Length: 180
Length: 180
DNA sequence: GACGCAGTAGACAGACCTGTCTATCAGCAA
DNA sequence: TTGCTGATAGACAGGTCTGTCTACTGCGTC
Image (cartoon, rainbow over all chains, first blue to last red):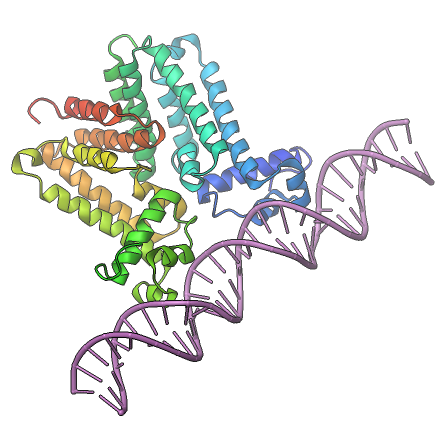
Protein backbone atom coordinates (compact mmCIF):
# COMPACT_ATOMS: atom_id res chain seq x y z
CA UNK A 1 0.00 0.00 0.00
CA UNK A 2 1.27 3.45 -0.86
CA UNK A 3 2.18 6.02 1.76
CA UNK A 4 -1.05 7.58 2.89
CA UNK A 5 0.54 10.73 4.22
CA UNK A 6 2.22 11.63 0.94
CA UNK A 7 0.03 10.39 -1.88
CA UNK A 8 -3.53 11.70 -2.17
CA UNK A 9 -6.40 9.25 -1.94
CA UNK A 10 -7.29 9.81 -5.58
CA UNK A 11 -3.79 9.07 -6.77
CA UNK A 12 -3.51 6.04 -4.53
CA UNK A 13 -6.69 4.66 -6.05
CA UNK A 14 -5.45 5.39 -9.55
CA UNK A 15 -1.99 3.92 -8.99
CA UNK A 16 -3.38 0.79 -7.42
CA UNK A 17 -6.06 0.32 -10.04
CA UNK A 18 -3.61 0.91 -12.87
CA UNK A 19 -1.25 -1.80 -11.68
CA UNK A 20 -4.08 -4.28 -11.16
CA UNK A 21 -5.84 -3.49 -14.44
CA UNK A 22 -2.64 -3.89 -16.38
CA UNK A 23 -1.39 -7.03 -14.72
CA UNK A 24 -4.57 -9.01 -14.06
CA UNK A 25 -7.05 -7.41 -16.40
CA UNK A 26 -9.91 -4.99 -15.88
CA UNK A 27 -12.75 -7.45 -15.46
CA UNK A 28 -10.65 -9.57 -13.14
CA UNK A 29 -10.11 -6.60 -10.83
CA UNK A 30 -13.03 -5.76 -8.55
CA UNK A 31 -13.68 -2.48 -6.79
CA UNK A 32 -13.25 -4.19 -3.42
CA UNK A 33 -9.75 -5.30 -4.34
CA UNK A 34 -8.80 -1.82 -5.52
CA UNK A 35 -9.95 -0.06 -2.36
CA UNK A 36 -8.38 -2.70 -0.12
CA UNK A 37 -5.01 -2.39 -1.84
CA UNK A 38 -5.21 1.40 -1.96
CA UNK A 39 -6.18 1.53 1.71
CA UNK A 40 -9.24 3.60 1.01
CA UNK A 41 -12.93 3.42 1.84
CA UNK A 42 -15.44 2.63 -0.84
CA UNK A 43 -17.18 5.98 -0.41
CA UNK A 44 -13.87 7.75 -0.98
CA UNK A 45 -13.46 5.91 -4.23
CA UNK A 46 -16.91 6.86 -5.43
CA UNK A 47 -16.30 10.45 -4.33
CA UNK A 48 -13.32 10.63 -6.64
CA UNK A 49 -14.60 8.58 -9.55
CA UNK A 50 -18.16 8.32 -10.81
CA UNK A 51 -17.79 4.68 -11.84
CA UNK A 52 -15.33 1.93 -12.54
CA UNK A 53 -15.32 2.89 -16.20
CA UNK A 54 -14.14 6.37 -15.21
CA UNK A 55 -11.19 4.81 -13.38
CA UNK A 56 -10.34 2.82 -16.49
CA UNK A 57 -10.51 5.88 -18.71
CA UNK A 58 -8.42 7.93 -16.28
CA UNK A 59 -5.89 5.09 -16.15
CA UNK A 60 -5.57 5.17 -19.93
CA UNK A 61 -5.54 8.97 -20.12
CA UNK A 62 -2.68 9.17 -17.66
CA UNK A 63 -0.60 6.70 -19.67
CA UNK A 64 -1.26 8.73 -22.78
CA UNK A 65 -0.30 11.98 -21.09
CA UNK A 66 2.88 10.48 -19.68
CA UNK A 67 3.74 9.13 -23.10
CA UNK A 68 3.18 12.52 -24.72
CA UNK A 69 5.32 14.15 -22.07
CA UNK A 70 8.11 11.62 -22.55
CA UNK A 71 8.14 12.34 -26.27
CA UNK A 72 8.18 16.07 -25.57
CA UNK A 73 11.11 15.84 -23.23
CA UNK A 74 13.39 14.05 -25.66
CA UNK A 75 16.40 16.10 -26.62
CA UNK A 76 16.08 17.64 -30.08
CA UNK A 77 18.46 15.15 -31.58
CA UNK A 78 16.47 12.08 -30.48
CA UNK A 79 13.21 13.77 -31.29
CA UNK A 80 13.83 13.49 -35.00
CA UNK A 81 14.45 9.77 -34.89
CA UNK A 82 11.81 7.20 -35.68
CA UNK A 83 13.37 5.12 -32.95
CA UNK A 84 12.19 7.24 -30.04
CA UNK A 85 8.84 5.47 -29.42
CA UNK A 86 10.65 2.16 -29.54
CA UNK A 87 13.19 3.38 -27.03
CA UNK A 88 10.35 4.29 -24.68
CA UNK A 89 8.95 0.80 -25.12
CA UNK A 90 12.37 -0.60 -24.29
CA UNK A 91 12.42 1.40 -21.08
CA UNK A 92 9.03 0.01 -20.13
CA UNK A 93 10.27 -3.50 -20.75
CA UNK A 94 13.34 -2.97 -18.63
CA UNK A 95 11.32 -1.45 -15.82
CA UNK A 96 9.53 -4.67 -14.99
CA UNK A 97 6.75 -6.95 -16.06
CA UNK A 98 5.17 -6.42 -19.44
CA UNK A 99 1.62 -7.37 -20.34
CA UNK A 100 1.21 -5.82 -23.75
CA UNK A 101 -0.40 -2.58 -24.86
CA UNK A 102 -2.77 -1.30 -22.14
CA UNK A 103 -4.95 0.36 -24.75
CA UNK A 104 -5.38 -2.76 -26.82
CA UNK A 105 -5.98 -4.78 -23.68
CA UNK A 106 -8.66 -2.37 -22.44
CA UNK A 107 -10.42 -2.56 -25.78
CA UNK A 108 -10.56 -6.34 -25.53
CA UNK A 109 -12.29 -6.18 -22.18
CA UNK A 110 -14.55 -3.22 -22.84
CA UNK A 111 -15.36 -3.26 -26.53
CA UNK A 112 -18.61 -1.41 -25.98
CA UNK A 113 -17.17 1.58 -24.14
CA UNK A 114 -17.02 4.65 -26.34
CA UNK A 115 -14.87 6.47 -23.77
CA UNK A 116 -12.25 3.72 -23.91
CA UNK A 117 -12.37 3.69 -27.69
CA UNK A 118 -11.78 7.47 -27.71
CA UNK A 119 -8.72 7.16 -25.47
CA UNK A 120 -7.29 4.48 -27.75
CA UNK A 121 -7.76 6.69 -30.79
CA UNK A 122 -6.18 9.69 -29.08
CA UNK A 123 -3.18 7.61 -28.09
CA UNK A 124 -2.71 6.25 -31.57
CA UNK A 125 -3.09 9.68 -33.10
CA UNK A 126 -0.22 10.82 -30.93
CA UNK A 127 2.12 8.14 -32.19
CA UNK A 128 1.05 8.51 -35.79
CA UNK A 129 1.75 12.23 -35.59
CA UNK A 130 5.18 11.54 -34.22
CA UNK A 131 6.01 9.09 -36.98
CA UNK A 132 4.54 11.42 -39.58
CA UNK A 133 6.84 14.23 -38.55
CA UNK A 134 9.77 11.81 -38.60
CA UNK A 135 9.22 10.81 -42.20
CA UNK A 136 7.94 14.15 -43.45
CA UNK A 137 4.37 13.03 -43.85
CA UNK A 138 4.97 10.02 -46.06
CA UNK A 139 1.74 8.16 -45.21
CA UNK A 140 2.89 4.81 -46.53
CA UNK A 141 5.89 4.94 -44.25
CA UNK A 142 3.73 6.04 -41.32
CA UNK A 143 1.45 3.04 -41.81
CA UNK A 144 4.39 0.67 -41.90
CA UNK A 145 5.98 2.21 -38.84
CA UNK A 146 2.72 1.89 -36.92
CA UNK A 147 2.50 -1.71 -38.00
CA UNK A 148 5.98 -2.41 -36.70
CA UNK A 149 5.25 -0.52 -33.51
CA UNK A 150 2.10 -2.56 -32.95
CA UNK A 151 4.05 -5.68 -33.75
CA UNK A 152 6.64 -4.86 -31.12
CA UNK A 153 3.98 -4.65 -28.41
CA UNK A 154 2.17 -7.83 -29.34
CA UNK A 155 5.39 -9.71 -29.93
CA UNK A 156 6.87 -8.70 -26.60
CA UNK A 157 3.70 -9.85 -24.90
CA UNK A 158 3.38 -13.21 -26.62
CA UNK A 159 6.99 -14.15 -27.35
CA UNK A 160 8.99 -12.30 -24.75
CA UNK A 161 12.53 -11.86 -25.97
CA UNK A 162 15.22 -9.28 -25.52
CA UNK A 163 15.59 -9.08 -29.27
CA UNK A 164 12.01 -8.11 -30.15
CA UNK A 165 12.49 -4.38 -29.76
CA UNK A 166 15.85 -4.53 -31.48
CA UNK A 167 14.24 -6.25 -34.45
CA UNK A 168 11.55 -3.60 -34.47
CA UNK A 169 14.12 -0.81 -34.44
CA UNK A 170 16.00 -2.40 -37.33
CA UNK A 171 12.78 -2.60 -39.30
CA UNK A 172 11.84 0.97 -38.42
CA UNK A 173 15.19 2.24 -39.70
CA UNK A 174 14.74 0.23 -42.86
CA UNK A 175 11.30 1.75 -43.42
CA UNK A 176 12.25 5.31 -42.65
CA UNK A 177 15.22 5.14 -44.96
CA UNK A 178 18.64 6.72 -44.54
CA UNK A 179 19.01 9.81 -42.40
CA UNK A 180 16.21 9.21 -39.93
CA UNK B 1 -29.67 -20.08 -33.79
CA UNK B 2 -28.13 -22.84 -35.82
CA UNK B 3 -30.13 -25.63 -37.36
CA UNK B 4 -30.75 -28.13 -34.59
CA UNK B 5 -31.38 -31.04 -36.91
CA UNK B 6 -28.07 -30.75 -38.70
CA UNK B 7 -25.51 -29.44 -36.24
CA UNK B 8 -24.79 -31.44 -33.09
CA UNK B 9 -25.44 -29.84 -29.72
CA UNK B 10 -21.74 -29.74 -28.94
CA UNK B 11 -20.90 -27.98 -32.16
CA UNK B 12 -23.76 -25.56 -31.76
CA UNK B 13 -22.45 -24.62 -28.33
CA UNK B 14 -18.94 -24.24 -29.66
CA UNK B 15 -19.95 -22.19 -32.68
CA UNK B 16 -22.12 -19.89 -30.61
CA UNK B 17 -19.57 -19.47 -27.85
CA UNK B 18 -16.78 -18.83 -30.35
CA UNK B 19 -18.64 -16.00 -32.02
CA UNK B 20 -19.58 -14.40 -28.69
CA UNK B 21 -16.13 -14.81 -27.14
CA UNK B 22 -14.45 -13.27 -30.13
CA UNK B 23 -16.83 -10.38 -30.63
CA UNK B 24 -17.77 -9.36 -27.08
CA UNK B 25 -15.03 -10.93 -25.02
CA UNK B 26 -14.90 -14.00 -22.81
CA UNK B 27 -15.72 -12.42 -19.48
CA UNK B 28 -18.55 -10.46 -21.05
CA UNK B 29 -20.16 -13.66 -22.28
CA UNK B 30 -22.09 -15.65 -19.68
CA UNK B 31 -23.05 -19.30 -19.83
CA UNK B 32 -26.72 -18.35 -19.90
CA UNK B 33 -26.22 -16.31 -23.02
CA UNK B 34 -24.34 -19.11 -24.76
CA UNK B 35 -26.99 -21.75 -24.09
CA UNK B 36 -29.81 -19.39 -25.02
CA UNK B 37 -28.20 -18.52 -28.35
CA UNK B 38 -27.25 -22.13 -29.04
CA UNK B 39 -30.75 -23.31 -28.16
CA UNK B 40 -29.48 -25.83 -25.69
CA UNK B 41 -30.16 -26.71 -22.06
CA UNK B 42 -27.62 -25.91 -19.40
CA UNK B 43 -27.21 -29.58 -18.50
CA UNK B 44 -26.41 -30.36 -22.13
CA UNK B 45 -23.67 -27.81 -22.07
CA UNK B 46 -22.14 -29.22 -18.90
CA UNK B 47 -22.41 -32.73 -20.33
CA UNK B 48 -20.26 -31.69 -23.25
CA UNK B 49 -17.84 -29.36 -21.49
CA UNK B 50 -16.54 -29.64 -17.97
CA UNK B 51 -16.35 -25.89 -17.46
CA UNK B 52 -16.39 -22.55 -19.18
CA UNK B 53 -12.61 -22.63 -19.38
CA UNK B 54 -12.85 -25.87 -21.34
CA UNK B 55 -15.09 -24.15 -23.87
CA UNK B 56 -12.55 -21.36 -24.21
CA UNK B 57 -9.70 -23.80 -24.73
CA UNK B 58 -11.69 -25.80 -27.26
CA UNK B 59 -12.56 -22.57 -29.07
CA UNK B 60 -8.87 -21.72 -29.36
CA UNK B 61 -7.85 -25.26 -30.27
CA UNK B 62 -10.30 -25.36 -33.12
CA UNK B 63 -8.99 -22.10 -34.56
CA UNK B 64 -5.47 -23.46 -34.35
CA UNK B 65 -6.45 -26.70 -36.06
CA UNK B 66 -8.29 -24.87 -38.82
CA UNK B 67 -5.29 -22.62 -39.31
CA UNK B 68 -2.92 -25.60 -39.52
CA UNK B 69 -5.22 -27.25 -42.01
CA UNK B 70 -5.44 -24.12 -44.14
CA UNK B 71 -1.65 -23.97 -44.29
CA UNK B 72 -1.49 -27.65 -45.21
CA UNK B 73 -3.96 -27.27 -48.02
CA UNK B 74 -2.08 -24.53 -49.80
CA UNK B 75 -0.82 -25.55 -53.19
CA UNK B 76 2.90 -26.31 -53.19
CA UNK B 77 3.74 -23.06 -54.90
CA UNK B 78 2.06 -20.87 -52.26
CA UNK B 79 3.36 -23.04 -49.47
CA UNK B 80 6.88 -21.78 -49.97
CA UNK B 81 5.91 -18.15 -49.73
CA UNK B 82 6.21 -16.12 -46.56
CA UNK B 83 3.03 -14.42 -47.64
CA UNK B 84 0.72 -17.35 -46.99
CA UNK B 85 -0.14 -16.58 -43.35
CA UNK B 86 -0.85 -13.00 -44.34
CA UNK B 87 -3.12 -14.15 -47.12
CA UNK B 88 -5.08 -16.20 -44.60
CA UNK B 89 -5.38 -13.11 -42.43
CA UNK B 90 -6.65 -11.20 -45.42
CA UNK B 91 -9.32 -13.82 -45.99
CA UNK B 92 -10.42 -13.48 -42.37
CA UNK B 93 -10.65 -9.73 -42.76
CA UNK B 94 -12.73 -10.01 -45.89
CA UNK B 95 -15.03 -12.56 -44.30
CA UNK B 96 -16.48 -10.12 -41.80
CA UNK B 97 -15.84 -8.32 -38.59
CA UNK B 98 -12.37 -8.41 -37.14
CA UNK B 99 -11.54 -8.13 -33.46
CA UNK B 100 -7.86 -8.91 -33.38
CA UNK B 101 -6.01 -12.09 -32.54
CA UNK B 102 -8.27 -14.45 -30.56
CA UNK B 103 -5.25 -15.93 -28.80
CA UNK B 104 -3.92 -12.61 -27.64
CA UNK B 105 -7.42 -11.55 -26.62
CA UNK B 106 -7.97 -14.70 -24.58
CA UNK B 107 -4.69 -14.17 -22.80
CA UNK B 108 -5.76 -10.68 -21.79
CA UNK B 109 -8.91 -11.99 -20.16
CA UNK B 110 -7.50 -15.17 -18.66
CA UNK B 111 -3.87 -14.46 -17.83
CA UNK B 112 -3.87 -17.09 -15.09
CA UNK B 113 -5.06 -20.01 -17.22
CA UNK B 114 -2.25 -22.39 -18.04
CA UNK B 115 -4.44 -24.20 -20.57
CA UNK B 116 -5.02 -20.97 -22.49
CA UNK B 117 -1.33 -20.15 -22.30
CA UNK B 118 -0.51 -23.55 -23.78
CA UNK B 119 -2.89 -23.07 -26.70
CA UNK B 120 -1.32 -19.70 -27.45
CA UNK B 121 2.14 -21.21 -27.47
CA UNK B 122 1.09 -24.08 -29.73
CA UNK B 123 -0.46 -21.63 -32.17
CA UNK B 124 2.60 -19.45 -32.26
CA UNK B 125 4.87 -22.45 -32.68
CA UNK B 126 2.89 -23.36 -35.75
CA UNK B 127 3.43 -20.00 -37.39
CA UNK B 128 7.07 -19.79 -36.41
CA UNK B 129 7.68 -23.20 -37.95
CA UNK B 130 6.03 -22.07 -41.12
CA UNK B 131 8.15 -18.92 -41.35
CA UNK B 132 11.27 -20.88 -40.42
CA UNK B 133 10.78 -23.25 -43.31
CA UNK B 134 10.17 -20.28 -45.61
CA UNK B 135 13.48 -18.64 -44.81
CA UNK B 136 15.51 -21.82 -44.31
CA UNK B 137 15.80 -21.48 -40.57
CA UNK B 138 17.25 -17.98 -40.44
CA UNK B 139 16.13 -17.14 -36.90
CA UNK B 140 16.64 -13.42 -37.23
CA UNK B 141 14.32 -13.38 -40.19
CA UNK B 142 11.80 -15.56 -38.38
CA UNK B 143 11.69 -13.13 -35.47
CA UNK B 144 11.12 -10.20 -37.77
CA UNK B 145 8.43 -12.01 -39.71
CA UNK B 146 6.62 -12.87 -36.50
CA UNK B 147 6.88 -9.27 -35.44
CA UNK B 148 5.31 -8.11 -38.67
CA UNK B 149 2.65 -10.80 -38.44
CA UNK B 150 1.78 -9.71 -34.91
CA UNK B 151 1.77 -6.12 -36.08
CA UNK B 152 -0.70 -6.92 -38.82
CA UNK B 153 -3.19 -8.34 -36.30
CA UNK B 154 -2.92 -5.52 -33.81
CA UNK B 155 -2.90 -2.88 -36.51
CA UNK B 156 -5.99 -4.27 -38.21
CA UNK B 157 -7.76 -4.28 -34.88
CA UNK B 158 -6.83 -0.78 -33.78
CA UNK B 159 -6.49 1.09 -37.07
CA UNK B 160 -8.71 -0.79 -39.47
CA UNK B 161 -7.56 -0.12 -42.99
CA UNK B 162 -7.52 -2.04 -46.22
CA UNK B 163 -3.83 -1.31 -46.57
CA UNK B 164 -2.62 -2.85 -43.31
CA UNK B 165 -2.16 -6.35 -44.62
CA UNK B 166 -0.68 -5.06 -47.85
CA UNK B 167 1.91 -3.13 -45.86
CA UNK B 168 2.63 -6.23 -43.85
CA UNK B 169 3.13 -8.30 -46.99
CA UNK B 170 5.50 -5.71 -48.43
CA UNK B 171 7.52 -5.81 -45.22
CA UNK B 172 7.50 -9.59 -45.12
CA UNK B 173 8.89 -9.73 -48.67
CA UNK B 174 11.53 -7.23 -47.73
CA UNK B 175 12.57 -9.31 -44.73
CA UNK B 176 12.57 -12.66 -46.47
CA UNK B 177 14.67 -11.30 -49.28
CA UNK B 178 14.46 -12.10 -52.99
CA UNK B 179 13.09 -15.42 -54.10
CA UNK B 180 10.62 -16.05 -51.28
C1' DG C 1 -17.12 25.53 20.46
C1' DA C 2 -19.38 24.96 15.92
C1' DC C 3 -19.05 23.88 11.31
C1' DG C 4 -17.71 21.77 7.10
C1' DC C 5 -14.79 18.61 4.74
C1' DA C 6 -12.72 14.45 3.61
C1' DG C 7 -12.10 10.39 5.10
C1' DT C 8 -13.41 5.38 7.40
C1' DA C 9 -16.02 0.98 8.01
C1' DG C 10 -19.14 -1.73 6.42
C1' DA C 11 -24.08 -3.13 5.57
C1' DC C 12 -27.04 -3.53 1.83
C1' DA C 13 -29.59 -3.98 -2.71
C1' DG C 14 -29.84 -5.86 -6.99
C1' DA C 15 -27.76 -7.88 -10.60
C1' DC C 16 -25.09 -11.43 -12.64
C1' DC C 17 -21.99 -15.36 -12.54
C1' DT C 18 -20.78 -20.57 -12.64
C1' DG C 19 -22.00 -24.93 -11.72
C1' DT C 20 -25.35 -28.57 -9.65
C1' DC C 21 -29.49 -30.75 -9.35
C1' DT C 22 -34.28 -32.43 -9.96
C1' DA C 23 -37.89 -33.70 -12.82
C1' DT C 24 -39.55 -34.51 -17.23
C1' DC C 25 -39.69 -36.02 -22.02
C1' DA C 26 -38.81 -38.16 -26.75
C1' DG C 27 -36.79 -41.72 -29.32
C1' DC C 28 -34.85 -46.00 -29.89
C1' DA C 29 -33.29 -50.77 -28.93
C1' DA C 30 -33.94 -55.07 -26.79
C1' DT D 1 -43.24 -53.09 -22.67
C1' DT D 2 -39.15 -51.78 -20.47
C1' DG D 3 -35.15 -49.39 -19.99
C1' DC D 4 -31.42 -46.46 -21.68
C1' DT D 5 -29.67 -42.24 -23.72
C1' DG D 6 -29.58 -37.64 -24.46
C1' DA D 7 -32.00 -33.95 -24.40
C1' DT D 8 -35.22 -30.21 -22.06
C1' DA D 9 -36.62 -26.43 -18.53
C1' DG D 10 -35.52 -24.26 -14.83
C1' DA D 11 -34.85 -23.88 -9.68
C1' DC D 12 -31.18 -23.37 -6.69
C1' DA D 13 -26.79 -22.52 -4.00
C1' DG D 14 -23.05 -19.85 -3.27
C1' DG D 15 -20.29 -16.50 -4.78
C1' DT D 16 -18.89 -11.93 -6.92
C1' DC D 17 -19.81 -7.63 -8.87
C1' DT D 18 -21.03 -2.47 -8.87
C1' DG D 19 -22.87 1.17 -6.67
C1' DT D 20 -25.60 3.39 -2.64
C1' DC D 21 -26.23 4.44 1.86
C1' DT D 22 -25.80 5.23 6.93
C1' DA D 23 -23.15 6.38 10.79
C1' DC D 24 -19.01 7.76 12.58
C1' DT D 25 -14.24 10.19 13.00
C1' DG D 26 -10.41 13.37 12.78
C1' DC D 27 -8.96 17.95 11.40
C1' DG D 28 -8.58 22.56 10.23
C1' DT D 29 -11.10 27.08 10.13
C1' DC D 30 -14.14 30.51 11.57
